[in-house]
Length: 149
Image (cartoon, rainbow, N blue to C red; front, side, top):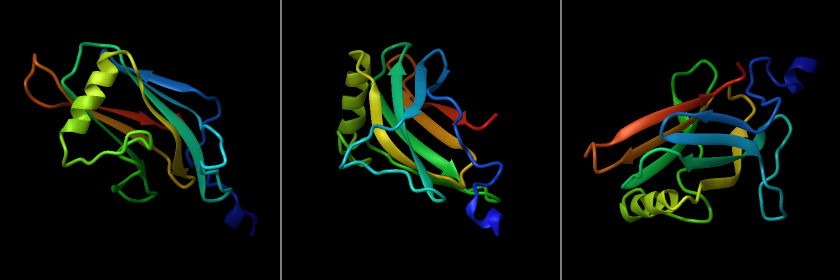
């Protein structure tokens, strides 16, 4: 009976926050969720809440898109968590939001999600960043995967 109400041993739980992963181009940080009366709260046995901060630490970019995914146990499918921060609603069909995000990052202002949900049954969080720049002329992608290991 106890196992029905406890978190699975391999569920994604961050023991120490923030956690930062970096490449030559990006810094991605998962941290504690902002708390507030209008923000979602964790629900034991269902989901946790976290924050996300992305900084551009490499070359300037022309456009940027960010996607968050979680996995589902025993499945290859990844489920999207969010596609745009609440502070800057956007539409993937409108390329202006990707250009505006690039300008924001180029100006040194990070991309932030102050509070997002992550199912307790998830064992991976993927942060996918797709961008373009003048040097390459084609989209590039990096994926940062956060796990318990």
